[in-house]
Image (tube, rainbow, N blue to C red):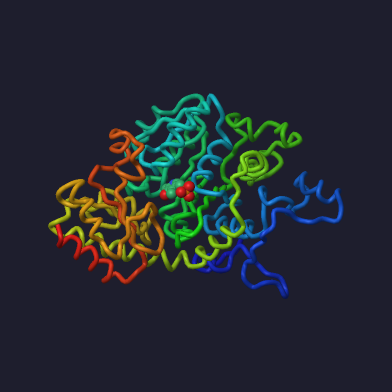
Length: 424
Ligand SMILES: *Cc1c(COP(=O)(O)O)cnc(C)c1O
């Protein structure tokens, strides 16, 4: 890993071509790799030699992107997955099994809420959702004997709550369990949760990291800081019969968690990214630092414009001085939060829909965090599977418009909003 500044890491880290090799990260569009002897392949399986044998487990293109993201987050290893959902699932299953319990902030992405509340429950893993603003004492009450992890989002999608990472890290570490942070909205450009005590970071790379809305993907990053050999995580501290008796916490050093995720769960679940998608993700990462800067400054300008407009009922953006999370954002996201804002148009649900339908530049899409300005009504789209109570717990009101501010010229973005507001 380099000691470059983060902007340089975005461009330079991960791939180091040797003399005469392709300057740009090549796409290894191959499921398999050739070796001269069975003995050599055996060593690869034993992890005594490094190399690639099957793209489900590792691929040279994907590997370079994983190295870059490891460097950006400041971890010891990373594993890319086919989607953000797959990253969250594998991250949890790597240390939880039937009969276990975990704690999650109630303010998280709707897809993750469903994964935790419905699918994990069916697998026998129970999740307690907690108010991210509760005190440490309050949060402690949710901890049980069989609690294995604490999960939260740096900036919650779509509620835009900024999580007090140090408080959640204290909750986790007071109980000898790790803190997992979904850092999708902040990206490592604006926040690196390991610096505040998080142990594992997950991302949907489908958002800012890709940045162009071309490739689904996810990633799990291991800080290497958590001690898994404390009696609570037998999957890491006792022999894995399915991997010839390997004891990850003993045999894999700081990279125990991420090694297990790959050689056991990626092997068995197979949610591997396509090499071509990893190539596209790498292109996105090369400009992540530039794009985040513009996303954040454009979003702040739009938020300030909306705050002064009398057709707007409320504006939520952690970069606004009036925002409840401004102080936390200053602490954890001093260079900017993200490009997503939410607001309500006076007149409720009906006015919101009319306003959205009259936008010209901002398109209605089920996506956020790419180069184009887009808009969405979560209550009737992404979050429609959730009950009203789950919506409110997640900080979403029925009139909430989520706008993902792109990197177009700010005057054009505001002019579009203005012409549509004028039609109300
Ligand atoms: C989109 C998103 C996910 C899910 O990622 P996919 O790539 O769509 O599977 C998880 N967490 C957050 C915060 C997201 O925004």
